[in-house]
Amino acid sequence: MKILNAAQIRALDAYTIQNEGISSFQLMERAARALIRWICERYDNRQKFIVFCGKGNNGGDGLAIARILSQKGYSVEVFVVEYSETASVDFQKNRTLLEEFLSVKVIKQKEDIPPLPTQVLLLDALLGTGLSRPISAGILAEAIKALNTSPAQVISVDIASGLYCDAPNEPTDLIVRPDHTVSFQMPKLAFMMPQNAPFVGDWQVVDIGLSPEFIQKEPTQYYFTDATAAQLLNRHRQKFSHKGTFGHALMLAGSYGKMGAAILAGKACLRSGVGLLTVHTPRCGYEIMQITLPEAMTSVDLHEQCMTTLPALEPYSSLGVGPGLGKDPQTVRALETLSRQSAIPMVWDADALNILSEYPDLLKNLPEKTILTPHPKEFQRLAGASKNDFERLALARDFAQSHQLVLCLKGAHSAVILPDGMVHFNATGNAGMATGGSGDVLTGILTSLLAQGFLPEDAARFGVYQHGLAGDRAAAARCEVSMIASDIVEYLGW
Ligand SMILES: NC(=O)C1=CN([C@@H]2O[C@H](COP(=O)(O)OP(=O)(O)OC[C@H]3O[C@@H](n4cnc5c(N)ncnc54)[C@H](O)[C@@H]3O)[C@@H](O)[C@H]2O)[C@@H](O)CC1
Ligand SMILES: Nc1ncnc2c1ncn2[C@@H]1O[C@H](COP(=O)(O)OP(=O)(O)O)[C@@H](O)[C@H]1O
Ligand SMILES: [K+]
Image (tube, rainbow, N blue to C red; front, side, top):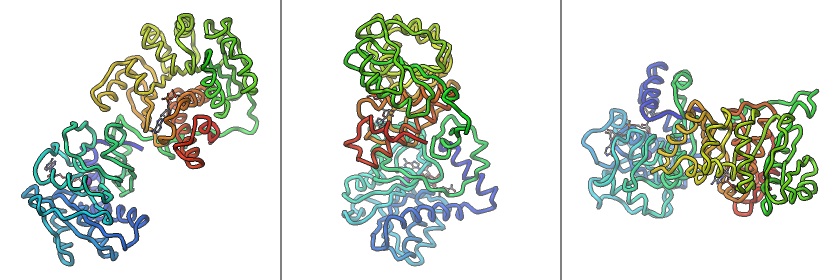
């Protein structure tokens, strides 16, 4: 799914209106009805609503929603916040329609804001994607403060009022802190940013039938890997396939006290469909590997506790390096050789990334399209600090483009950034995955997919999606709190 910016969404609305021969009012009605379906699936008409409307089209949506809810027998109170003299045409039409059977109250000053008790549901339709300047004072600010201090649940229509759709806000900006955001047609870039978590809540998209042709043609740098996008990358096993068909992966992982990382990565690699797996470990890991992971072959380093030499790389179709590896100077030397000599597709993670940060020359040697999987701290060590998440994303795009690498910037909505600068945010995953070893599991999955011949770009998008999906299944089977990285491995499969 594409993610478009505010200007593109405006153009998409306009194109849909023109191309389908409908009016902007009809499109607003469609958006309101899509949101109503979302509400009716979750709340029956004993639920009381208070709708806060601005005077643009987001406010128009709010008025249309209030009318339809009221017709369906819900009890609805509507307040228009009078922050401006002017109103959009469709706001005005909806106001006239609504006022035929429901009185619309206005909020001109703080005292006009009603009490907002726990049992009501508050709809935030103050401002949408048309936000043109931050909110810091005035009656809009007062309304937002009231929504944010009320104990009642808040649902933002399209986007939280005050939140920029595609640009960073300042910490001083006033923004609604909703429990849910129900957004029209596609997620907004703002939803992907960790800094915006309090201003998005749990978010869902409702389809309002905006033009698929326009969306298809419109260029963007941002995509969302949902189930449909991931399914397009899936491959089916052929009846006569054999283990040679699915490649031979090599994992360089583990050191004294950190063999668990090698086991997690190795197990995830096997559970992701690789034909054969060899794990190269220091001597101390030999028995551990043989006993815990009988399906994997073990290649043993000369050193007792850390990796110092590389096995011959010819037999392997992919290589994963980093989990539990440590940063011994002899390991650094081995990775230096690896960065120069390897011609097979690779994933660099964990300590391999920390070594890259300390020895940036290795970075210059890495073959094109090597996959790097940093979490935010590892990325900061690699590329430097940034002021906010938007700046970090820009830095990551520069990094992927200038080094011609595939980056998986991990977190909630992990971003897969391709060497051409395109960004694919991931739909799956949950906070239960914030537990030691989850990243090692991802490295195993990606190494497995590369061995099977997935292009690095596809391996990264598909692997990150499946990793998160396995995490979601694990969380559903147990709960986020109690899940551990091994559970993610247990629930892998597609
Ligand atoms: N255009 C369409 O046909 C559709 C639009 N939809 C809705 O329309 C919204 C976008 O509508 P608009 O473009 O009217 O934008 P908004 O409803 O976000 O409001 C923009 C208006 O508020 C003013 N404004 C912006 N920032 C302000 C601030 N900080 N303080 C005071 N005033 C401010 C602007 O000057 C403009 O007049 C979407 O989020 C969505 O809810 C939906 O109804 C779907 C169809
Ligand atoms: N809150 C979250 N929501 C979704 N995914 C998460 C969340 N926290 C962590 N993850 C995922 O878990 C993995 C953690 O990786 P990492 O930090 O490298 O862990 P480790 O080094 O312990 O293996 C990443 O793939 C990340 O995307
Ligand atoms: K809103």
